[in-house]
Image (cartoon, rainbow, N blue to C red):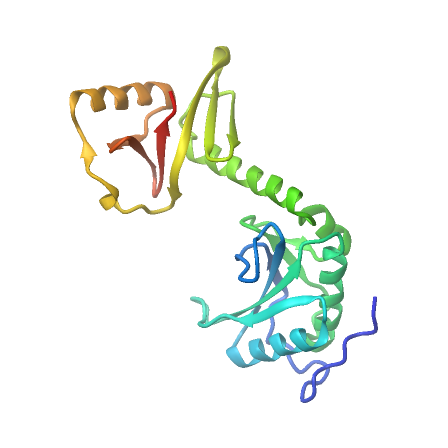
Length: 245
C-alpha cells in the first residue's frame, strides 16, 4: 500500500465528512472507456454536486491506476450525485479498490465502507478479501458471473414453468423439462418494458395453436405472436423469444 495519496490542493482531511455515502456499488453501471468485461466501474454517491466533483478530482489526481473518473450529469430521486470510477479488470483490482478507499476514508472520515455488487441488494464489508471473492478480476470470470445473474433472472421470470433446470448459451435459452425433454428458444429482446409497436400481433389459427402449445409447454403466461416471435409477459416484465425448432 502506498502512503495515503496526498489530498488535492484546497482539500483537507475530513473536508468531505458527511457528504459521501458509505455504501458504494461495483459493476452496476456500464463503462464508457471500454467493454465491461475489461473495465470495472466503481460508483460512489455524494449528497450534492460540489462534493461529488471534489471527490472525482481527488481520485483522478491521486491514483494513476484509475482510467477515468466522472460525475453524473444529474441527481437521482434522492437528490444524490454519482461519482463513477473506472479501473482495469485485472488481478490487482481488489488491491486497487482497497487503496482507493484508504485515501477516501481520510477525506470523508468514514471508518468502514460497504459495497453492493451488480444487481444484488446484498451489502458486503469492503475488505480486500470480500472484493476478491465477489468481484470478477478477469474478463472470463466476469462473463461467467454475468451469465449466472442472467440465468437467475430468467428463472425468476419463468417461475410458472415446470422445469428441472434452465441453461443459457449466448442468445439461446434452453428449458430442461422432466423426463429429459428440452425446449430451446432464441432470445430476441429482453427488457422490463417493450413497445407493442415492435410489430403486429398475429391472431390467425396457426398462431393461436402455437400460443396454446407454448402455454402447455412453458406455463400460464400472457403470450402474443408478433411476426415470427413470441412476446411473453409476466407481471411488468417482457421477453421476446423465437422458436428454434
